[in-house]
Image (cartoon, rainbow, N blue to C red; front, top):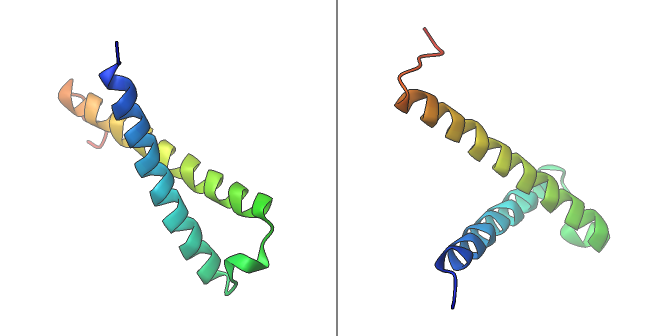
Length: 76
């Protein structure tokens, strides 16, 4: 029996990976370099760093949403 959550989880990971790749490309352009200037391992590290930033942002915003639902106001 297929687990529907596994398919959703895979899709979300793929979307995050794609966004991380877009951010990595932007980061490389801002460094005034081309992807060809990097080794494949270096490119993977850049993408992984961008993925980590995205996951961190998701966790942070998720925590704020939970606090808001529970009625906690941390800003005032």
